[in-house]
Length: 211
Image (tube, rainbow, N blue to C red):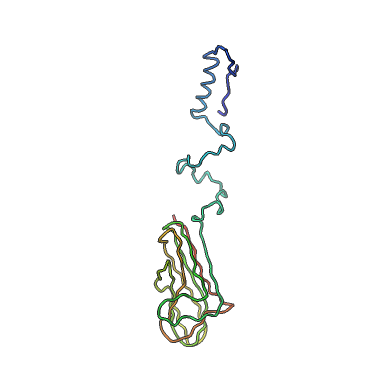
């Protein structure tokens, strides 16, 4: 219907005797008719600043959103996949300890999941050079707790070996979680060294929001 129209003799004049049918009823009926189911875009002033809190949940279906309307920049951080990467090319020696210790040259990564249904995916890869035979295990520390062994490498008397470790875990809390790469010597007496300038250690953590 659009905006409301007044009766032909509007506005009312001071001292005027109003006709119930031609004056009052025309104006009142027009208002009632418009409010009772006929309000449309023309009734809302530009910049009305209507609070979104007044919209009921699920009142805007996905089909009403333009394909490119919701961008990453418009989404809350917790709803976007987050990734952090640490790398190193320093020639650091592996531990000789039988207990897990931090991989040298790599800082820990701290992520903040958006909810306890988010998935944290952790990967680590490197090249090792070695003199002497030995076996090493790799794991991840998630929030201060070591995972089980997630990768093993057996090093022969000489040469190079690639290591790739991956782990996925459901977030235990929607709060900051520190993650580290860990390693230990399982057997042997080898002296192993992490990579060189052409073979980076790569430590990556990604948080994937889940419905």
